Image 1 (cartoon, rainbow, N blue to C red):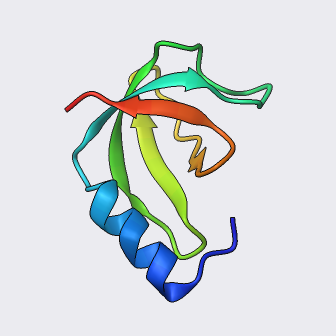
Image 2 (cartoon, one colour):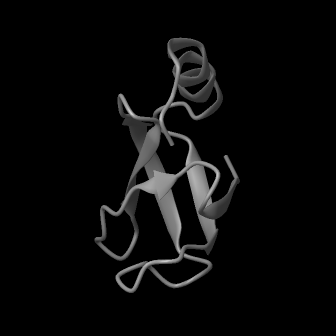
Length: 72
């Protein structure tokens, strides 16, 4: 996702550092399994959501492509 400054600001406000997410679907061979829990570490300058997954993965969520839910 190529973000405008305003879109990026909204993502950073919505997906706060420390929020807990549950992965629903990710189209990537290295993706954690659906249901994996992770903690948001931030949003980068292109709008990817940085996550530390409970299985040790650090694969980013891509807004508009991957599916997840915020649980905390």
